Each structure stands twice: as C-alpha cells, then as structure tokens.
Length: 206
Image (cartoon, rainbow, N blue to C red; front, top):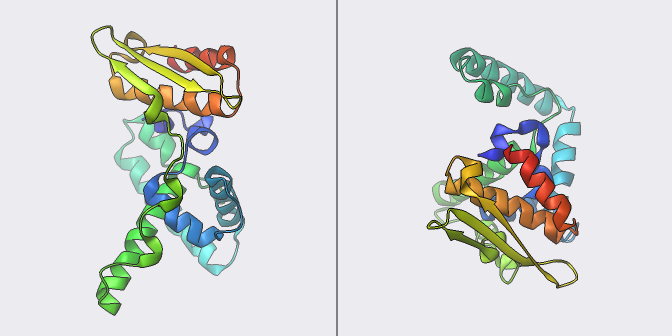
C-alpha cells in the first residue's frame, strides 16, 4: 500500500476519502452536523485525539509505546514496518485512526449482540450518505492488454480530463496503479491542474 510505503507524505490524510467501514463511527464521534466533508471530519477527530492529555490518553500512549517497541524489535529487518511502528506521543496518523474507527464499529456491534441481544448497533449501520457520491473507481479503467490504467474524470468545473498510469512504472502491479490513479482523482477533484497531478504521479513512481 502506497500510504504505508510513504508515511511522511500523509497521503491518506490529505488525499483519500474515508472508507465505508470508518464513515459511520466517524459521524457518530464527531457529530452529524459538525462538518459535511469526511476528510475534514477525520482531521478534526484526529486533532482532538492527539491533543488529549487526560489519564486515559496518557495510559493509551504508554501502551502504544510498549507495543511498538516489541514490533520494531521483531520486524527490525523490515524498514517500512519499523517506520510505521514508531508513533510519537500525540501524533497518531490518519491511517491508524481509520483502522481504529473500523474496530470501534465492530466493538459497538459486539456490545449490541452480547449485552443486549440485538443483531447489531443500528447507529453503525451502512453508509447512506455515501450514495450518489463520485468515487475514483467510477472513473478508472484497467487495460491489461496495453498495460495501462486510465483515469478520465470531471474537474470541479465539470470539464473532463484524462490521464494515465503505466503499469511498467508500478512494477506491473495493477493495484498500485489503481491506487495511484485514485490519488490523482482526488487531486483533480480538489482543483489541482492536470500538469501538477501528473508531476505528482511521476514523483511518486520514480
């Protein structure tokens, strides 16, 4: 995953939509009316978590440090793993927060089933707000014969733009090419010029 391979770029925080599994718990914790943009909501919650300094927060970071120390020792031969397992106090990443939001959702469902005999926690169900939203997957096409992933999507002014990710630049890995195209999609939707988007692509894949 490119998000994990380049942690300093903070790609998930700045480029990616919040996943379906994290959307409902994010909405629940931040509040439905606080913001309409999920990335803004994720950034808001991340800031609150990292700024917390109560007893629970201090205990949490103490446990994180202890666990990550063991991880760094066990996986010392793998620099990308070591880089991810080196979280500083008050600096949780957006990647980690999304994962924890998904775990929180599962926890709520578990409590509903085991303590209250319910099928699930209805406040954590589905993602109705996501219906009808433009997603990168709707505009990405994979041509394995010509070994290229094409992205053709509308800019904020509705004018269509087209760009490509060649598989030879990703070691013939289609998933990496798709991920790259998805990041390019988000930049285009944010109003970044196609020239800057392709420059970003080339820098990431060089």
